[in-house]
Length: 163
Image (cartoon, rainbow, N blue to C red; front, side, top):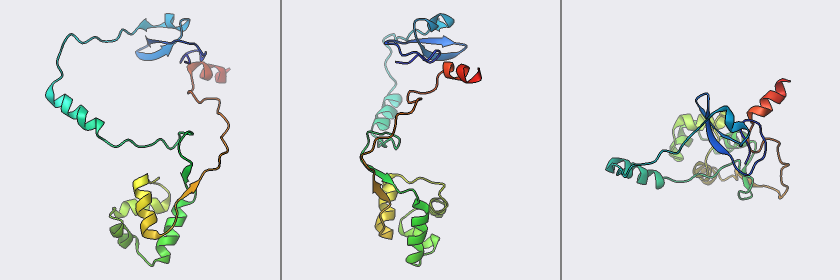
């Protein structure tokens, strides 16, 4: 783990409250705050409405992380807005007609063509089916080089930048 204050890699971090902020700190930095004890429930039952909402939450679809490097080898093409516009124009469809065909709002189509909206997998499938174009491409097996801040920026990094 990495300490959120000093940035050191340590085997164990402890939850500590520093200036009303809960952070994961190493044993050296935990002295700057107070220990956050986990709240223990005292044999209280969960209200039925809460348990019903929790069950609904668990049944929601899980979306994949587009920034996950271990994901499948498919990605959205870089010029997706341009491809969608060209394909729609080649089929002689207005934006309104196209939106009706894919069962989406006109504002979604406008945002897609402006490049303001990154479509999810479900919308990409609709677009590919209606337009007859491929909006996904295979990613080569080249692994991107590891960034310095894969685990996030710590307070120590800000202090180093200021000096």
